[in-house]
Each structure stands twice: as C-alpha cells, then as structure tokens.
Amino acid sequence: MSIKTTTAVTAAKVTRALLKLMNRGASALPGKVAMKIDSDILSSLSENTKFVFVTGTNGKTMTTSFITNIFRNYFDNVITNDSGANMIQGIVTSLIDNKNSKSAVAVIEVDEANLRIIADYIQPDYIVLTNLFEDQLDRFKSVDNVLNIILDGIKKCPNAKIIANGDLPLFAQEKVRSLNPIYYGVDYRSANKEKVTCPQCGSELKYDYFTYAHLGKFKCENCSLESPQKDYTITEVLDLKPKSAKINIEGDIFDLNVGGIYNVYNAIAAWAVACEMGVEFEALSKGLKVQGNLDGRQEVFDYKGKKVVINLIKNKVGANLILDLLSLDKDDYALYILINNAYADGKDVSWIEELNYDKLKENNHIDNIKISGAKRDYLAEVLTKNGFEFKSFETLEDLQNEIENEEKQKVNVIANYTAMDTFRKMF
Image 1 (spheres, rainbow, N blue to C red):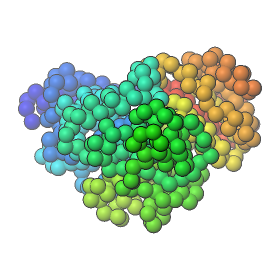
Image 2: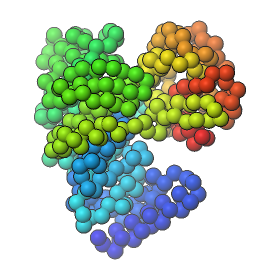
Image 3: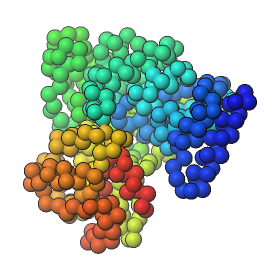
Image 4: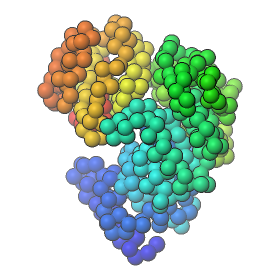
C-alpha cells in the first residue's frame, strides 16, 4: 500500500471515529475524505478480494445481507457495506478495513447509476440483478434507461458472471440473455392480473401466472421474448406471514425469519450466488436461517409499551407489496404513513396515487390512519380521494408523541427513505 493510500485510509478511519463519537452517520463521509487524498484508493483496497455486486431498484440491501450471512458461515474474511451506503463514497468507507494481505470476499450493494462508475476501479466476479421497477424516475427517466445504465456498467466488467431474476421480462431480453446470465426465480401464484407490455416489441405479454407486479412466467406471441430456463428456483412457497416464510428450494425446506414474497426472491438470489461460488449446503442453510430484519425493513421497536413496526417503501411496486404484507397481519393496529420527497426519495412521489387502496380498504385490522412528512398534504389529497379518514401531523416528532396515546398496542409504519431514516432514529 502506497504512502498516499495509507494516509487516505488513516484519514478515513479518523473521520469515521469522530462521526461515531458525535453519534452521526459514518457511512459516506470517510470514503469521500479518502478519495480526496487518493482518487485511486478503490483499486488499492480491492486487492486480493473477490467481489459480488448487487444492484437493482428493490431488494439490494436485503439480498446483500442474505449473501453476506451465508458467506460468513463459509469464508474467513467477508466485507460488506451493510449500512446500505451504495454510492462510491460509501463503498470506499466499507473497504477501508480490508486487509489486502489476506484474501477476502466483498459483498457490495451498488446503486444502479454507480455501477458504471465503480467498475472503473473494481472488477467484480459476480453481478446480481435483483429487479427493475419504476423508481426515482425524475432521476432515471424510465426503467429502460435504468437497465441501459446498468448494462453500460456490465460492459466494463467483461469477466463478471451475471446472476439475474429470470421472472422479470426486462432481464429476458436478448441484450441481457447475450450475457449468458445465471437465472433464478420463484414458482408462486398471486392474484395479480396486470397488463404488461413486452419490453422488446411493445406487444402485450401473455402470462401463465404472476408472482407479484409483472414478475412471473411470461411469453410474447409477437417476438422471441419468453421466460428463460431458470438455474435456481424456489419450487414452492409453503407459508407466507408478515414476519416469516417457509420455502422449498428444489426439495429442501427452509424457514425464513423475514416475510413477504419480495424477501423470498432475495433469498433465492443469495442462494444462487452462494451455489455459484461453491458454498457448501450447511453454510447455505445456516445463512438463510440467521437472516433477520434490517433497518426499516420490518424493523420492530418497543416504544413506551407499544410495538412499532417500520417498513420502508420506495416506489409503487414496493409499497403495494407492503400493503400485501400488512394484510397478513392479524393484530389490530394503527397505520402511520410518512412521505418525504428529498433527493434520496425521488422528488416525484406521484406513485402514491397508483397504490392498491382497495387492499387497504379490505384490511379490517387497521384501527386508524395517521400521516406526516414533507408531502403529507399531497398524501392527504390522495387518501381523501380514495375515501379514507385520517389525521395529519406536521412533524414526525408530533407523530412520535401520538404513539403514546394509541389505544392499540401495535403501530405499523410505512415510510419512504428519508422519512423512515428520521423516524427510526427517534427510538
């Protein structure tokens, strides 16, 4: 390691220590400081390290965690950016403790737009594509554009093995198939009956079944697009609850300590990566079993005798999945909805108009609805238009205080990123 790199790493570690002393987030700034001193620091920090990159619009953080938990049962030295800081500065921060003299495996969550940037410094061995849904379109313009940005990054990684969600039509296109990806998927039937357009020719896709949103088994009758043969499959979802699931992976039964069909997909993505890297069955099994909830993802707090459960939402698909998850909750509860529109959330939050409010109306376990956040007035308009009664609170602190007065012992919170981050730090 050069003197410049050593100085950069030391400065980053000091910055991180000071931020932690001040009880502030220390995921991005240390990396930024390091890069100011040594712009090529990532190349140095990645020596003797195998890399798995995880990218997509949804599921990056949980899939990264699943993979990491499996790997820690098998490899001696595993590194990850478990804070979810998935842009270049955050990735530098996650690697400053990497001992270059000792071989390591790094599981790195990568922002969709940052893959092509990070690929200039690090050549991953595997790239996992979770899914692509409409997310932060004010930043990315379209889902097709997001895919093209990711493919631009993949072109810079000619030796990387691609592991992709085979139930997503976008990933079944020839421009993805030409990369010879390993495909994974889930055999699960939902009640969804969306109209989905073929991403290759624009015709309507025909589905044998949907799993959720526009994932499922599909075929275009106008062009060559169809569901690819999957290399790794969850052949049956035996049970699905708000906080757990039981799955069958080609004859082997596993209990997951997280709920939601989206987490079932995260599990099989991790399984596929681990199998491709030769991880033995026992380590795979242990890794799936120890996976728990992460920050803001079915995260539970006990606050003054009340059980508070926080669920992150980012876009229409993710929010509808959380509404599905809440419909499985058999406890009576208050529902809090928090919506901001900071840069990290996406300035355009019009997707909240398109949620499945019928699912919310059918949920007879919701005792009352309360809302807050920078876009609470807009959220209030949407809820009013859909026939809901609710109370609006100006600040998240007001909402936090309201929890003490709830008659029900449980509060389910759904919030987008910055609202979730601020709210959970209050507990």
